[in-house]
Length: 82
Image 1 (tube, helix red, strand yellow):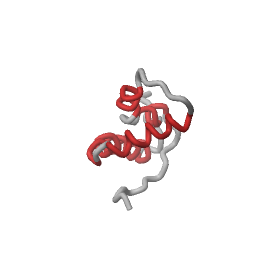
Image 2 (image 1 turned 90 degrees about the vertical axis):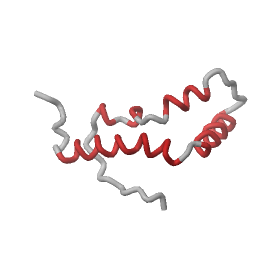
Image 3 (image 1 turned 120 degrees about the vertical axis):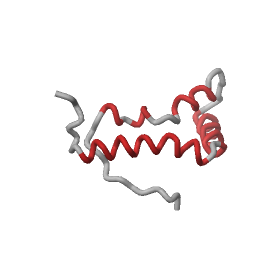
Image 4 (image 1 turned 45 degrees about the vertical axis):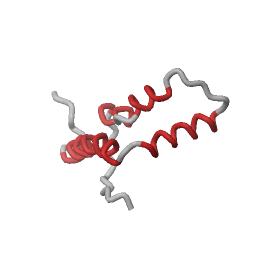
């Protein structure tokens, strides 16, 4: 078990989209300029890179996402200033 608590999924919110998760920038940088023979090679490289990241790397990205989701849930998705 990872020790993470599962939060209720918030209403759809563009500012809470998974693309905000900090994983993608460093992963894109790691893959930049590399060439792969097929999808299996890409998947292997991504899994290898993900396994090499320390726990703190994931915690640093998930922590802020949890806070943003919690805020969205607590205000029932009414996060847009009017």
